[in-house]
Image 1 (cartoon, helix red, strand yellow):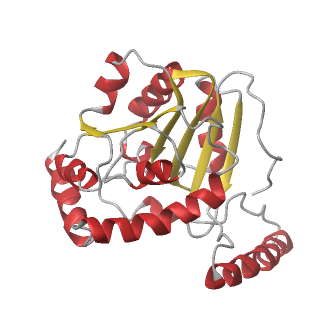
Image 2 (cartoon, helix red, strand yellow; image 1 turned 180 degrees about the vertical axis):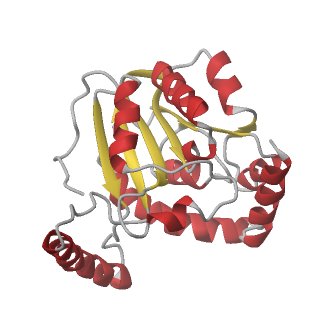
Amino acid sequence: MEFHEEAYYLYQTQARGLLTSDSLQKQFKKLAIWYGARLRHYLPDSKTARCLDLPCGYGNFLYFLRSRGYKNIKGIDLDANQIKLAKMLSLPVEEGDVFNYLSSDNSAYDCISSLDFIEHLNKDDALRFLELSFLKLKPGGVLILRAPCGDGPFGAHDAWNDLTHKWGMTSNLIRALLEMNGFERVVTLDERPQPTGIIEILRWLVFFPSKVCASAMCIGLGLRPPTIWTRSMICIGFKAHVAFRGQDEKP
């Protein structure tokens, strides 16, 4: 890593205040509820599916997968501080370079997840990462990405709120990148509220009419409404001719 990356990652680790197992678990439980509601149709059916999280950071997505009963999970991250935090919750993580691991590992995976990573890579490495991920997936495997989204008026916040981000993208671009690298079906999801609690239900109910009104305003101004209104998006790519679980969703 370059100096500015090491310095900023160290700052983030300290600034989050998630330095104990209790604080980590409290935060991870909240995230797991949202992940479960939003991604339940896109995860492997078998709880013995091989799942790889790259890079895993401090382990929030691995914690979610473990909470859903997945047994064969693993995470790789270059940041020793993040690995140390993940191990506080006994998560199966290893310190290492994502590209070296993908190039040398002989395993095949049912699911590869990569949250908030691709925007940290230069464009050549981003394409290389997608290519290696595709090769490591079993037929019918799924790649789950999370990245800032430039579709709507709020996308600049997540795209440029991190010193180590190198570029931004739209839902159309990330779809094209996955299709370029062999993924035959691509689904993009917004990060809308999920009806998992009283406050979340209220936000969920407000989200839809607000989106309709905002889209109507765009049309009235002669503009195409954004596909994704939220600041970040989730993009899911399916390898080969896998049967789609769930209905097509209009973000």
